[in-house]
Length: 101
Image (cartoon, rainbow, N blue to C red; front, top):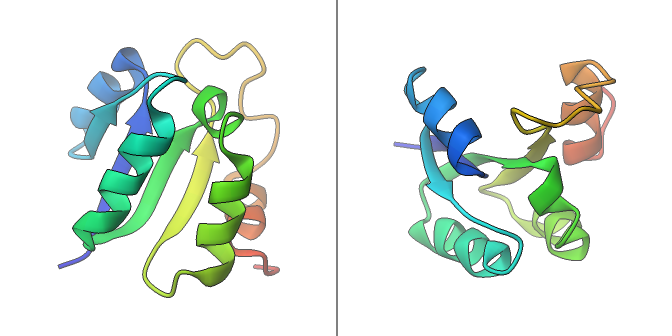
């Protein structure tokens, strides 16, 4: 069964765990390793990553979104991100998938 995972800071991961989303707490030094571990599990259809971590590995995210038939990575703001969403969730999904929704 395919799953949704979150890769982010402790506050964001803890908050979304309350909604039933499994998460991995990471930091900017380990984000590439943690993302690779999630991808290797093979059951992550959607991987949500906080913006601060996504900014450290943009090439990897684009590569996964363009070339992985099994997973898509969607970037969201973290709990304390003052920039907020700024765009609709449809815009984030459109960007992540590379198609118009």
